[in-house]
Length: 459
Image 1 (cartoon, rainbow, N blue to C red):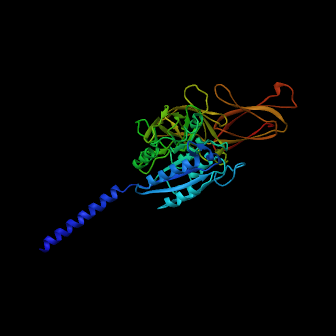
Image 2: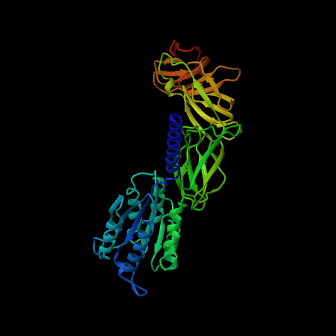
Image 3: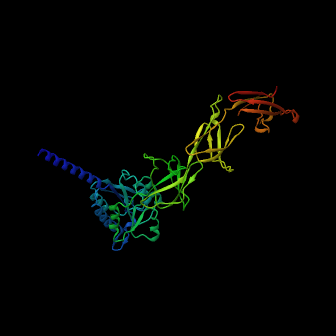
């Protein structure tokens, strides 16, 4: 009998645990709806058998009553154009009247009921400020804008939408227009989904979308592909350009998330993009058109390796000043990068030519960069040349090889210092006071790393 009771108790506990798990699993996620309500002076205008403001209020009541039936939903109210009388109005006249909270629909309805058309229409400012009205981005965050006009404060609602998306707040606000012309409606195409106030199914349509949470975030990830087409490359700045305007829209540093996958970005799905990855040299994607509410993978071939420039520090502490010009090994003289000595830099795989700005120049051709490998380029340290004379003069330093190579001209002072790569050299010099070429003096010398070499032109 005791065993039966234990079995029964165990069964009840299992069922209770399973039931709680099921409840937890099906619990709807939090949805936040911010109402942005136009209470500007133009809302006094007649619309059909009422005024625009009264029509907007009646619509608003229907919305909040319909949405209040949903579980785990919170509301907030922002108004604009409701405090400063027009004229002149105030382009900052926008305020969060009721913040997000539980069971606040009655308070919100009372605030809307009190609204009286007063000021002007700062739409961009209101939408931008609404980004700060949401506590966080963990919920499904939405905006419903009810308005009868267009921007009156020289703002750009399109820019406001971008700022909202950058903060992860909302991606396509619901725009409900009252008595707008076709041209006015077009100004909202870049902001969100437009709905006409006179549409009889308006409340049902939008409530249904919110209920089913179909307004998903439009997202993308940029896969910087290595030679095996794995998205392993990262830590590169990337710019998203609008292909229609040529203007850049976003700038991000590419990263891999905790699962070692490319990070997810939430983007505006309106424009067609081209993504430039600022690798060395730059790489780019094909034109990309995002789909609302879906995740898009943007691949870019960007296999990379490293070039490390190394030279001993040296006794004269001048190595940090040496730099190298990096070019592609294709005869193209375009400078891709200027890399400082004793640094490591990442490059797209391929072959590169280096012009290292030593005296004389050091040229290294065909430096091959391979996937995830480091190509080490080492230089011997320089030596110091001290040149002294009794008189000012003109001259130059030549590298002493089979064919004499000009290195640099001497200045006219009587004491000069140069840092030269190891090798054999000669100086050709003539005092300014001596006007015949036959008075040219030639001095041969050898430079060794970290050793000072003195040349006296008067001996």
